[in-house]
Amino acid sequence: MFIPYGRQDISAADIAAVVEVLKSDWITQGSAIDRFEQCVADYCGVKYAVAVASATAGLHIVCLAAGLGVGDWLWTSPNTFVASANCGLYCGAQIDFVDIDPLTYNLSVAALEQKLASTPPSRLPKVVIPVHFAGQSCDLAKIAMLAAQYGFQVIEDAAHGIGGAYQGQPVGNCKFSEMAVFSFHPVKIITTGEGGMVLTNRADLYEQLIRLRSHGITRNPELLQNQSHGGWYYEQLELGFHYRMTDIQAALGASQMQRLDEFVARRRYLAARYNLLLLDLPLRLPTQHPDSNSSWHLYVIRLKLALLQTKHQQVFEALRQAKIGVNLHYIPVHTQPYYQKLGFQWGDFPEAEQYYREAISLPLYYGLSEADQDRVVAVLRTALEEILD
Image (cartoon, rainbow, N blue to C red; front, top):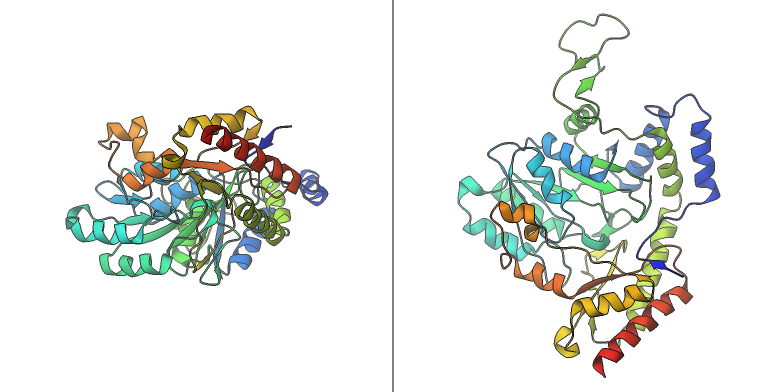
């Protein structure tokens, strides 16, 4: 039996919630969106939440709402999916990266501070996007202090992070940032199929995000620039996009939110169990920052290749051949051909590159049984022992 690295868990209640919407008059642009947004906002302790078609869509419109444009700079982590950087390019901005912390694999605050101090004012970032890798929050308080000093805006790429905590507060509460973005892809903590959510505490950003997700259009009488022609009237105030979520997706998301704590508790249990089962192997296990309580979207090991005298790919393929659906998160963004055309190259961010040479994401999801987890560990142990022999 194939064991994937991640998968959704859909209950009878989830199905019933979707069917209820399908039988209603509104399968998009209806009240299910508002309910889902309020559910997430309440859970995170944030004032506003805006459902969108994907986390990528969310990252795009938060950059627009932040005023990012031609001549501006966006800095982010190289250890992320390409969307965390692409969102700046969509706005016409230029991109740079900050190397990762060798323990948490998040954006390194020390590297950020050093880079800010050595960068000419004309190239300082307007926006910094720290990525909460694997569900563990970045050190937001320290990043916020640097933001105040250097004048950039902090936007959290919290695609992995819903259900996690930082300094005892839910990830996504935007205490140290302007906005945060969640993902609800099927391998994430909860799912809407495809979809995402933008969170903020600022009313002005909320109003703009609502417009940007729907063609830049508003019907809000307080925002209209001309007198209304009648009940049908709307105005396009800016160039927006068709980034809406459907009520079908929102109904699933709101239902999934009822089990969010259960999902995270199971992931934390399985992560702790991995820590015990893998303790004696030539691996680096995940490190948790004392201020963070991860939601464990991913469980990433790093091979101690100097001890193994083997190739990373050899271990990865041994697991895949045994039908263990391991993956690798992530190929450093700056090494992608598109970004190399922009001037980046191997060697630019050595910590992220060394991480990439050693990392493997093991299966971790709510429905992973202990027996399947034992099988993952047994196959990994056998592969490593064969190499060591």
